Image (cartoon, rainbow, N blue to C red; front, side, top):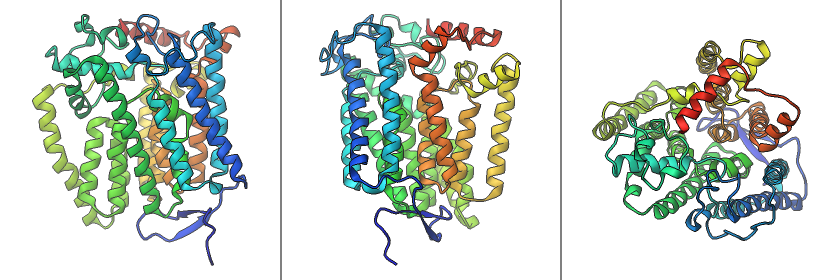
Length: 477
């Protein structure tokens, strides 16, 4: 029987050669105009956020009230200047736009069968192009990347044992936030940023922004490739990841470095599907050296690599790649380990451990509760591996469990989960991912805090919360 080109083919098992079955989305909008209008709404929302962020100093761009030069604002500077002068109105407006983008994203997913791959690709490229013009949104991590690079290359200080506050006269200092925290980033990412310290700060800023956008496009291309390898309709997988407002506004618009980890991580999945196991292991090791989170893929990739000879080849690739990566790290940074302890002790108000701790009446995200959460993640991984089902779905559930265990939960971490949910076979995982994305977005948009404050609701009031807030202030000074 001839297959409808709009159908989404999903394998029963995410393994090469697995038997396929066809699955239609239960909710589908049958006219292309709905999907096109939804994509246009996502683009318009992104453009509006970028235009207002670039227009003038505002809460959308941290520290912009202290310094907002033209090279930071970008070519859209002044376009919508003075259109909204009330900071509270701007915060509410930003929140409404992001929520509207999330609604449009849902409509686009529901009508994906009516959209061509060419249309989706054009939309993805257009979204990346407009976000390239934006100053970093909401947080200042991009300047932390440059700050650690300059700390090591120009000031000859180890970014894993020293802090940006020691270089107060550096022009990047005033644009950073985490000034008293050693680098929490992977050694290969930090090492790769060192050459940026040799060029003027505005040049380094635009080079890193451009590299982030290009890496993001590479990541999306790999999602497309993996979907094709698995027998999925790549339109759904690409749209599920690339049109998500969290990915667009918080990951891409914030120019966070997760995409640099996701490129080798997705490459390792693609290589495994091609049965190029050693190269797959090597790519995974590179991803881990950029951001340690990628190690979560390893037990599930071992599950997928059958028979045992493939597992040996996979681990051989990991070991072979680890040697030069470790040597390069030790030669540059010594034996200093990546600093994850500070962030692991900080709390965000809506992190799951903090909310659970408040509901249970134990005082929020206490150290004991966080230890229980970490143990629970290990148990979840063990159970998922033991069930020996779809390995991409298992990796997705494990990643969701990890996100739910984090004391410091920020929106762009959801990007770790999106490709796994898009490529796995579980509808429940996709629904859980979308629900979690909505929850995280609601917890992070300014309107939520403003509404709760007006209602007299305070989440960060326990002794644990106050201690976390005090630590954050010390790290930011």
